[in-house]
Length: 183
Length: 308
Image (cartoon, rainbow over all chains, first blue to last red; front, side, top):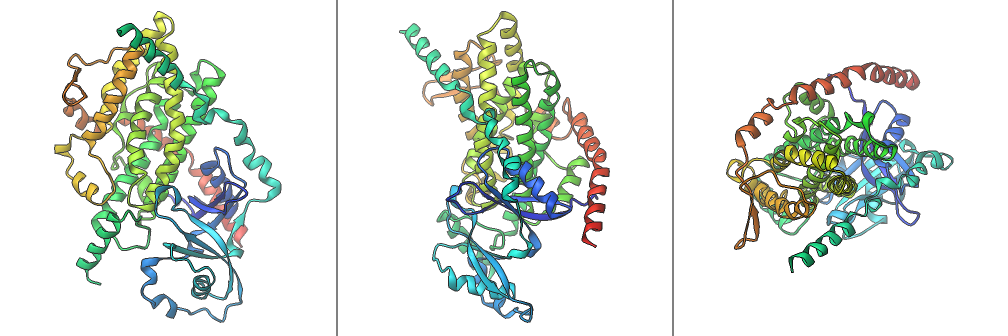
């Protein structure tokens, strides 16, 4: 069986006023290839302003259901590790179009458990169903300077949009012509 | 909590319209059924690249060529979204790819039919992608979060696939006598396989009731199939095309278009690996996988060296 490489979660920023949100994942041998793959898999269309890839094993994730028991807090082992920045992600909705895990902010912590505890205090919200925390150091981000070559080409490919195929007016016209004949 | 209480809460969450997320408690059978469905769906996207991919080099114009390239590339991307969703349930990418290449995995039977003329590119877009969108629009409301999210993305993109196909069918149906004959021939060959895309008859679909109770599906195979028929028949007839079914008739009481019984022997034969192109499709996938082996090796070697 061939290895498909490591798994990376992909975060995509679609508009200036939107946070990075989880689009799915890709497999790749390293972060750089993961970013290239993520671009091919998730940015065949506008709009994308920035992409992040994160090795999945570096993500500490808990659903609200998993948070009900406090066992995860006690597993706080690596507390002598240096303090660093952790990015916090939440899933805030339950309908199909809004259930994405999205970036909400950052906390300083020295372990995944501490990062999550601080995230729970810093970004309290009753409507959160999933929490992810990730050390910022492991996030591989697209560079602003690369944006034109990575994301701009999708803008000219208007034929990827269904609006480029105005078929409904033709069908409506045919239908009314048919109805006139029938009368 | 004991299993019974977990199960009750799970059903209550589904009744409230909540999405089940990776990490949440779920019945083992829910996980198993979803892995089965999602991986088959992923394989269908990947194998689905082949019937149309064969025509990229023979596109009649540059515009048609870039459109078809973009569509086939989308199908590859959709396969990736779906493998991702199945992985969140514990299936590995390697296992799924292996199962496909070994001929153990199922995928949509429609892709085991050959694409014989350029008119098939229009007909596949309209019928096959149209049927897929119906199924996928339902699945976008699925109770499992990652599957539902993948479906939302896919549906948006597939609308383009369907409409580019429709545009071509309209052009051919209103074109020269030769073009009309070509597009009628394409309809004759793709009509039945596209109806089969909705899966076995409800009486042969033992998982349906459970999947509906779990909020994975909201409609049965036959309900979706009937919706598709009711939408397609008037549109195709409006274009002067003839549905290849001598028994097709409109039923005033139900408001349904009634078709002949589907050839279920053929359906099961193709599903079980004995359709016109099953062997060819798998051979093409294996060849692509083997030809790409040196690339994967090189990338892994580079990644290892870089890490040191």
